[in-house]
Amino acid sequence: MNDSDLILVVDDTPANLEVLSEALNDVGFEVAIATDGELAISQAQLSCPSLILLDVMMPGIDGFETCRRLKASHITQDIPVIFMTALADSTDKVRGLNLGAVDYVTKPFQEAELIARVKTQLKLHHLTQNLEQQVAERTAELTQALQQVQQSQIQLLQSEKMAALGELVAGVAHEINNPVNFIYGNLDHFEEYMQILLDFLQLYQKYYPNPVYEIQKQAEDVDLEFVQSDAVKMLASMKIGTERICQIVLSLRNFSRMDEAEFKAVDIHEGIESTLMILQHRLQAKPQYPEIQIIRDYDKLPLVECYPGPLNQAFMNILANAIDALEEANNKLTYQQIKDNPNHITIRTSIINAQSIQIAIADNGPGIPEHIQDRIFDPFFTTKPVGKGTGMGMSISYQIITEKHQGQLKCSSKPGQGTEFVIQIPIYQSMVQF
Image (cartoon, rainbow, N blue to C red; front, side, top):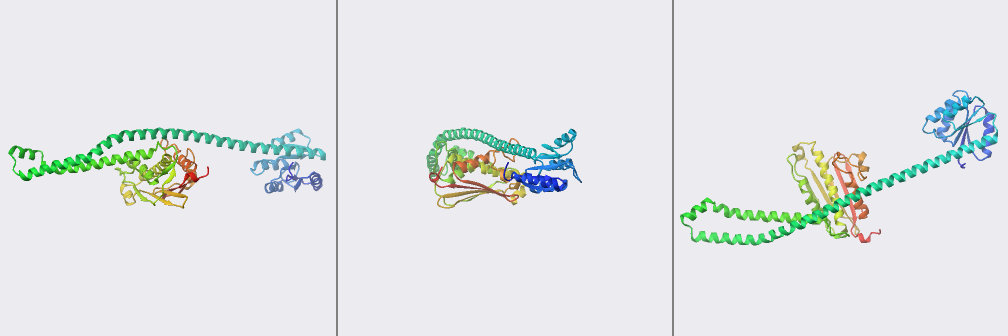
């Protein structure tokens, strides 16, 4: 029995109400009364009593109908009902129990028996409530534990996959780097030798303007003048191409960061640019739509202590999602419509204060519907078609930023106006209290 237990007594006889109220008050219960079924239903919905003592024979709707209506309402369906009846027919008693009553007392009743039955049913009711609450809490704990296990498994698989990918990328970058450096290192010498040969040829043509017929014919056949001018252009193009390969190799190495297991101070912009280089093929113009423009608004940032590889992975996930959103929107537009309102991703970096920096990545895509914005960081949640996404990219990014770097990752989006992800991380991880 609880001090706050309220008993609703329903009887159309004033004398019975008085006797019952006095008996219940004497043992510490609070009592409310109703003189008919309609009033009982209204009173029960307003005050939510702990138990109802319900007379069967009443004017208007009888006790059976009153009980049926109480059990049909989600507000009052769990309140235990004890019938008070002068009916001795077991059929009526069974009817009452089938309607949801938990017990009955027969008139004229014994006060001690009535109080005992009320206390017993209240105790059972409270035990049931406590058990249901414990079951619900335990179920919630188990559900949460299962989700954590599933998330940990996916994150472990993702980490292993990223580690394997990082090793592959680092290995490929290393293998490419040696021959590229050899070629790039010799291009300067080759350019110097080529210039010597061309200068010598021009000097020869200056002092021997009229060579023998065979030399003159050979020069015309090979179009010597064109070869001289085009050779210089080809060499310049080879240098540009080799420099481009060197940049890609450097980006691959910076992106993988496999040699950096612990956090270290790095240039955040270098990580962003390495990620953009990896995604360059997705940013370029396609036959069906123009290129996706990258707008850089970089502040002068200090070196930031972080885990470079995982942080680059978070950049990759956010940028790839932005590209996905733009491509999805492009499928519904014409080439000219896209050209009139070009796709772009804006990357802004800034210093918040002496302790932290901010990276904001915004696109001008279709935006995220409001009803799913609260779920974008949930594990396994994705709006992409089956086979197009695991639903773990943003969840893992959130974990990398908030748990691994003790930072914040927030999303703001307006349908039709685009989406922005804002990352805030400390400049000095060593100052973070773990």
